Length: 363
Length: 214
Image (cartoon, rainbow over all chains, first blue to last red; front, side, top):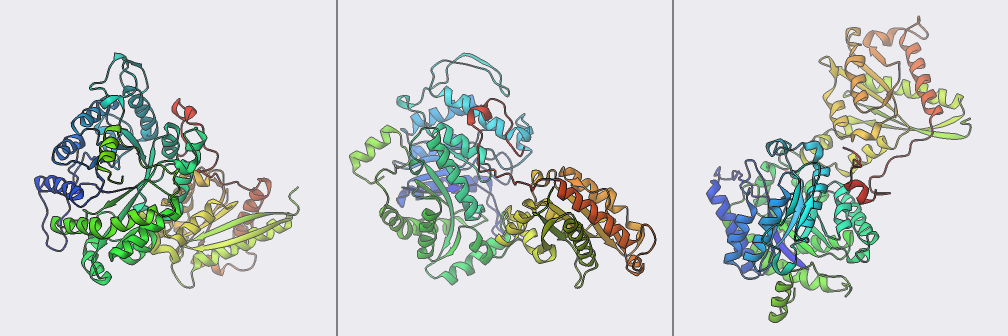
């Protein structure tokens, strides 16, 4: 089981101080968060990709390559890579290059993006979201697996005799997750390819999460990739911790009340009841996360969002330290109990597997 | 032909007052539909949704993108119904914002082909065309089957007596109720499409079949 952090990279004013980080400060904060994730023993850092303010991470591979140079073990990933508006040829090239620079510590998560105007800004039509995700990924999948590609489709100029370089490290393409909150069509796509499915359940009630993951698992088996309980599932999570629950709620409430995603809406208490958000003690985060297994079965990757809504960097780093020291070690132990041996870990590049085996560090 | 069968009717009413004239109109329409269904040998099952009870949850849904469990149950009941009565007060020349908020969170395909009876209330008969210039286009957007007779009740209509003349409130309620009951009777019970059941093979999706709900 892998644990990590994912970040949307928002530039948000701290509602308690009125201070807003500069783009430079936010980019550096994301890097610092990634380094902290490795330092405290987390497995994964994933960055969002956005092409509009108030978000800074427009260029994930640039950031991830820089982090790769400063880390040893951390898996570098995305949440998400825009398979709709990026040229799949450029994704193939960029992430293969990142694989080489990061010694294989790379995977990525496909997503469709969160804002309508991004489509026309990149020459696409919002209404083509699903067909773009299908066609672009079909091409990307081939570019990493076939040395010479002849291809034509609806959305991109045709290719004849094209070779995407560099070739994937040791001939092994990066593992791909498909992320979707509300589209069964994407669960179907992930299942078809035998790729991973990530449900960013932080926005959705559990019965919806359950149906999406159940569909993915059922179709994973249908397409012959193995039994449903061996499909590769990832989930989001969302926490703010203090030793004392009341202190956590007191400190986080002003951030919740002003946050772009839920500010002005439900109360913190209602939101916690209806989504995986936990504001409380580390033990409450552990209990809540353990319950995810009852919803989706044994799964492979758990990412937490820790840095958003204007939380200052020192507080975020403290949160990640608590995650690494007090939460994840318990989750590793507890999730291992009763986990069938046949349930696989999230796929890693063979080089990373070999390194882990040599270190005898549990994956 | 439908003897012994049953049909479900959901009534969505956006009145704000307690008591509310919109609810009063909804109840009269519901009774008319039930009467005509029973005359046709069809047993109605009716549930009434007061949107006021879900006002906070509707706003929260718009802000967060997901419904609270009680609102989800209401949306599910509407999507699963065989027919709908939709009633709103007319505010500022159109349906109320509360009414619109609900239909802003109902998925578009969910009402396709559903018989819908539209109804509205207002202080003055001068707003009656809001039924046809605001409510009817809204349900046309959903591809719903809107009944020819919509019922608008101004304050004065509640004093128009038991029978009244042709076109009175009582007569219009009866006519609209009959239209909806007939539409429900001649249709098979609706089967709600489950987006998670019977997935289309990916090869077909990839090679051009448009996915549902585009």
